[in-house]
Length: 170
Length: 78
Image 1 (cartoon, chains in turn purple, green):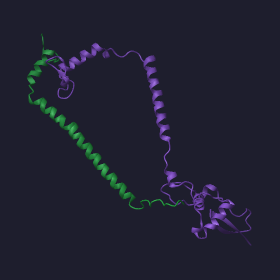
Image 2: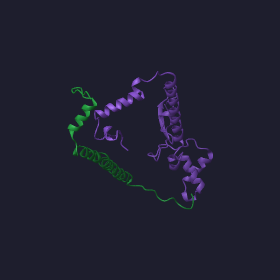
Image 3: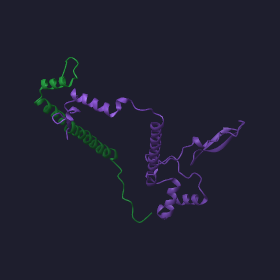
Image 4: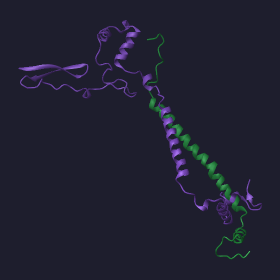
């Protein structure tokens, strides 16, 4: 003698499964939620595998019965209700942008500011003086030597110097 | 539903339209940047070099450098 049970495999479809009654357990392992097909709102999946609302209320079940008759008998609100049973968001709602970019931009700027404060603190409190080769006298002597050597005479530093008047070109 | 139906959206040729747009855009951007570089950087540089060497006298430059004292192999007691 066997035990016949109707088991939901895909949510709307119940499949009868016959199992010998001699097995000690209830017969069939209950299908876990995560093994069943899921509803997903994706722009490239227009018809998801299951409807959005899984367990219909009595009112919704009555509406589903009415859906089996002629659709022109349905009012506009009923059509919308049927849509909302089947789908969670419309394409317009799915594609709607968020204000997330403002949060991200604010966060980025904030942390840039924190980094700036850290760098300023370091320069003021931590670092020693710069090498003497950065002093104004040294830099002018260095530049004069570069001009004497005619460094980059075509487009570079020597090209900006006016040798006749001993000054930078205007 | 409301009395006025939404206009039927574009159903076909979506990839073709996107490809056309992006192919044209990529072509324009790459050609544009090449042209900008040529006429913004390359040509002025060639012109600058031509202008520099048109009337360049290396001996005069050598004398100037020698006088300034930057050449180790010469001695300038001036």
